[in-house]
Length: 95
View 1 (spheres, one colour):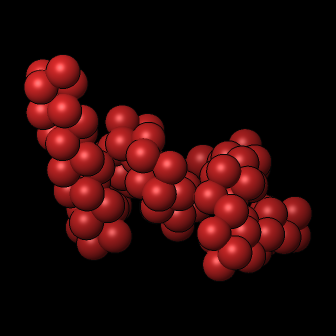
View 2 (spheres, rainbow, N blue to C red):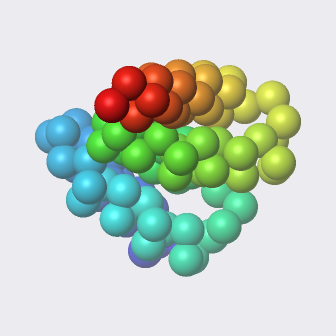
């Protein structure tokens, strides 16, 4: 559990620095230790949104909502992911 907290805090520090790829990697390591901890999924979803990885963000939010069906951050970030996917779809259609 101590390693989990350390990795999560390192991920949070990377987010504060705007280092979203590194933060996502730390959160992914956390998931190997505890797949039920929803905050690392919503945190990684935030990183994916910042990296324009909308499908990955949506998947993380979907996972959280299967565990906690009223998680506000997961709903909000999934909505942002859907919005990003729609914009991308429109841009591809226009090319």
